[in-house]
Amino acid sequence: AEEEARSLQKKIQTIENDLDQTQEALMQVNAKLEEKDKALQN
Image (cartoon, rainbow, N blue to C red):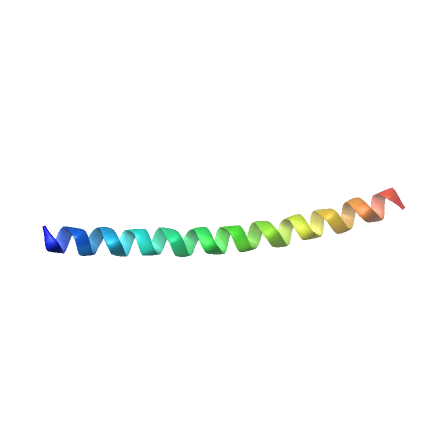
């Protein structure tokens, strides 16, 4: 059971890291989209 809990904790950590990276990428894409949107409005 302890080994299972450790394994699950590792999985959770990996998923949280992936989530962080995905959110970071999303923020960058959103920033680029906003720039393009502003450029189009000018």
